[in-house]
Length: 98
Length: 382
Ligand code: SF4
Image (cartoon, rainbow over all chains, first blue to last red; front, side, top):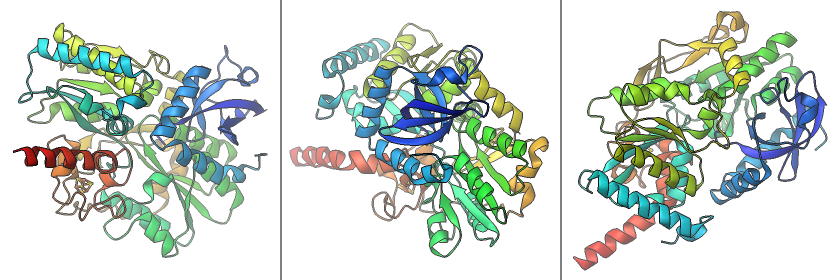
């Protein structure tokens, strides 16, 4: 919940509502990108970005190397699987392809 | 040192550890009167135990495990409030999984669910919102907890609920805020902390400026730290270097994630939906002024506290619990009378055993055998 998990934005499903789909270790789910878009980074430009996702919201852009290392850390401390399971568990309620 | 081999760069880790030892010597502290560095965030607590970082440091530098795990500081009365809400027949009670096992005075949310209450674990407050859309004849309550890391997300969810005119969604707001908490620790009698590791992801939202008073007013260094073992070591080094040079400043070791000014959009969402409470009750720490937030009047329709009667009872922690002392750094987890006996991760008595970010659970999971072993050898040798 507090550590978040890195993922990659694969699709912006609703630019006006700031909704996107993120891929986290092969699991896809809908997230909000409201906190990482502004005039310099419009929603459309987010596809392909690596982000740190906390409770369904992208909270910050990161680079690929940072994403990989963070994921490794989360795996080592046993948090990655729990986070991915939680994501998977509720992904269906969004009605997005997963 | 079995843990060091797992570090990304073991040689560098040992080098930083050596530099830390040199600085500690230069500062002139001893194992009897060690430098005390508080890691505010439970994520750091977990890393410190998982990677045996304390063992890498000289005995003259000690970590004090701070209160920065939102699940760990939930008082029993608050859990009872959740259970009371969850047991209403009209309510679907939604919560992050982390909170399910925290003991209340009668039961946990997990037990309430087993007894028939409609409690659902969600990954995101947005999932709770979706449940409200899908179940218009039920009241969906989301249990919001966490520091500034999760606060913007619940704020945005409430804004979304208002924009959609959803009438059956509400937030039971138990968000807590980091700055008054650190201030309360600094003001507590007998406080002997020499410096702080600042929480990485809270800082990603609030930035560095809110910590300035710690350096200026209290003369203590704070370094915002990442979660990898090398990050933690590097940050300890930066704290010690400040002390050695007679400086107290706010520094940022985690610049790759934490921007100087935080996240403007996230801060705006917090401002829009939440306001400070006069005081808020913490497990083990008592009431701390202005340490919690509540929902502003403009969003009253989405406030579970206004929508439903909430018992709001104060329940004292069980007598045997010493969570408060551990949270204040007065004792170590293993010194609690019930540690590992009446209180284990399987059957937690105190909430520091519930979450892997709690000092007791982290200690139980990673360090208890090590200490026993070294203790035994010491005894055998004596
Ligand atoms: S062992 Fe249990 S009761 Fe004692 S301080 Fe830790 S969590 Fe609290």
